[in-house]
View 1 (spheres, rainbow, N blue to C red):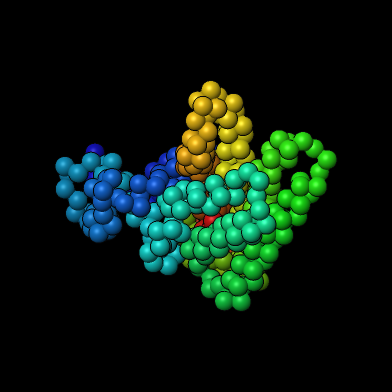
View 2 (view 1 turned 45 degrees about the vertical axis):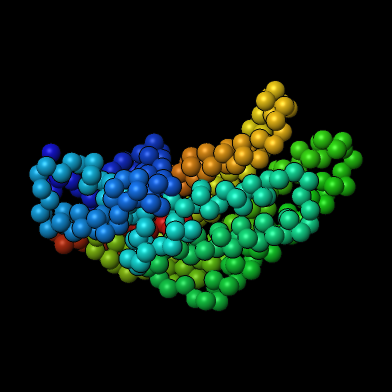
Length: 328
């Protein structure tokens, strides 16, 4: 196949199905994309060069289709689709597992103290806020006030919920073993609530300004509040689901693993094993959650503001649907 004919205007995998979106986001969140020159022999400079030559229809016929898609994968994992700016490694989807695992392990450690709860919840929400901002829908500007409000709201909600639930667990009339077990599940409601709060506070301005929409040809037609509402609702559902595999699977897995003879004999293996479980949960749990909805959202023209109805594309055909970057 001629590499110049590869259609890079659409994702490699079908975004109309969950399976296709899952494959897409597994590639996007692949930790190896942090060092693509080492793992893929595809540094970002080489990736950009291949994509530019592809655009100019100048790729050699000997180049494989997989190489073209690898260049696209590396580029998309590093570069923001709206701004064209390079995302810092800790805040990329590909860096989520690497940089987020220590925080998850810290939150899941048994018998949490007040200081440890506040520290890890605060640092985790700081990391989440940076990831949210770095992967936001940047078609419309976000004010500094919204950023600060979102961050403070997320930290306060996560810390207060985690501390409050830990206090309830500590005072519960249960055995010490049950208390330890319950404390390991406290981070999930705290993080899920805080993540949702953070996103809503940071993106609430989109409800009044709207987000940019475009037609199937890629032509932009302005900002739509209806599209913003749809994007925020889908992202909210994702934010509630996202922490589940990361904060529920590891505790459940460790309950089972701790009963094995090897951990009873070598209890110091518990922490590295739990870290490995968290990495696996990150690598597959993150794509699972964000695959619930397509990254490029679709909204029918009939559901939008009057100015988006009865429009036609460059060929004179009626525009029945518009598209937008959902954000993460």
